[in-house]
Length: 124
Image 1 (tube, helix red, strand yellow):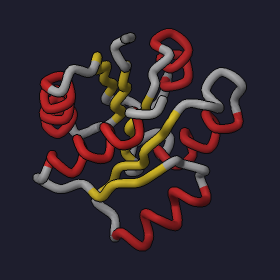
Image 2 (image 1 turned 135 degrees about the vertical axis):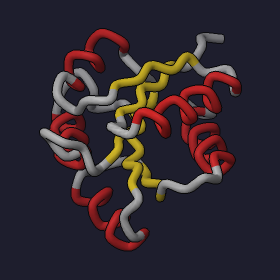
Image 3 (image 1 turned 90 degrees about the vertical axis):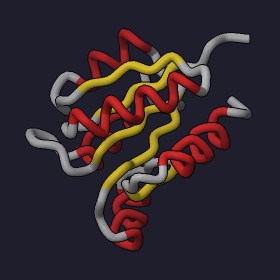
């Protein structure tokens, strides 16, 4: 079975490393970026099965990147989770507008992240 690739894009380097460690421990191949600019090129190179995208990114917001990726032929079928410390209702609305596959509120409970990722990748 092919190892699933995940790209995490988050400008918070501490949270980025924690999420990477947690998901690597689950057996995923995890790539990271602390910048929103250049995400399309990273996606084209890595071809991740799943992208975890922080909404509040300097330069270009994560929900805008999600929308761009979903409209692109290269990443149209990739699963994207919007990830943010925003209120859950606001995040749900942003995810729907950006055509994200799912959303997750940031917390210190990384088990929720693992469960969401496992659920989305088990059938892909």
